[in-house]
Length: 250
Image (cartoon, rainbow, N blue to C red):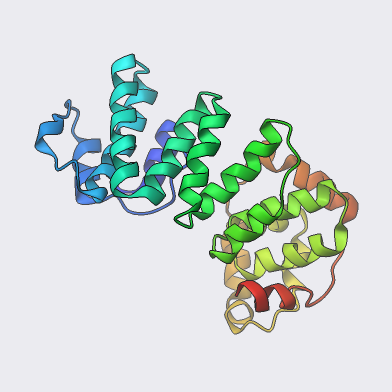
């Protein structure tokens, strides 16, 4: 029984943002029967968003030309009626096929509607196609309060060995309680969480609870290997260094 997007992520190895499934999504994912698109309002952005996820999954289960065509059809309609989400997903569709030129084209359209994920995808694609990565793309996503990019900023600063701003963003990531940072640091540098200099009342009041929560979490060691190795070699603390970033990004 699927109740939320995390259930789909685990079952089908996808990466949807965590949220409860809508009534429609529960219906279509928990009933094993073929959909008839004539039964749905294909001008309703919420319905189109749900159907786009459904056909993503259908294509994973059965990568047929029919399922791909249905998936693309729904994404094209979504990009018309909800350009921010639709163009973002169209970019991902073409990126999966290694058609990065089209992927970038759609992500730039999504950026016109302030999609932080599109900024992030553009940054990641620059590395994929051997272009110089533009860190400002991640800063723009951060201005839109999209905090998952913080770990990418840290990784990039580690890669170019710019350790002082790296330390600031490392501390800022924990200030924002980003799960990636909490899991990694709690497993590999547990003393760091207990020495944080934050004045944030939330973290001071909840530090013990947070520490207990993340110690039970699993991390993707393959994905985080680079960060773990480089942190162990270059780790240092500048107490309170994230205050500047808190002032800029909140």
